[in-house]
Length: 313
Image (tube, rainbow, N blue to C red; front, side, top):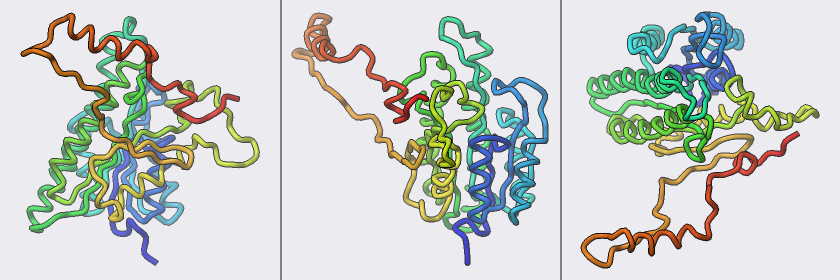
């Protein structure tokens, strides 16, 4: 019996632990050959010495289950290393079909306390990292499409966050990077559609090393049921988006967690005001806009409990 991703080759970045590991295992379980990328640094802030162990362990886990996998220890925020990652997939499996961008770090701080390095490092790993791998994968698919004279199977699944959607006071660098990833996703989706490539982004909610503080107070079921925040709830959507079945899903943003997938609409106009004369005056704007906000909450971003739909333990 054939599997949805039989004969396909995939890259998953940041796949040595947590969400990336679950995604790599899911793609392998659906038949894909996988390049497991992870820089292997022990600190979630990107600190510590790089190590081959996390990526090698996940690759071995896939091979032990009968799948095909190789490990890649590299920093996707480095342009040359990202190029080498894509080339490894092509050299090992003959092509690349699927790219899952998941690698990231955290350096949380309030905006008035954040250093330049804390800002730059998070933007570099998340946003530049997504760009680097996407650049080389896109060039590969474009060349293949030109050579074959028709579309190819290409899938990119990017990782955004609800920190971009709802705000996160202590994560201005992370929220900005995740917002940039959505812009990169929609732009790349338009550019690559002609080649048969789709590009989508997910906002996953998962209990991982990156989110251990965020979800520290949310209860974990003790009766053997799967944790609502387990990465295994996210991975099936990634597998679906990577497959031929999702050929018409392109340029989309999806929130996923605990047995729920929500498709997020693009921003819509909430209210519109027109000037009485050629242009607005200050007084006219005050008369039109201020009343609109008078009866509205000062902060309309979702509270964490409402967004997650979870109870604290």
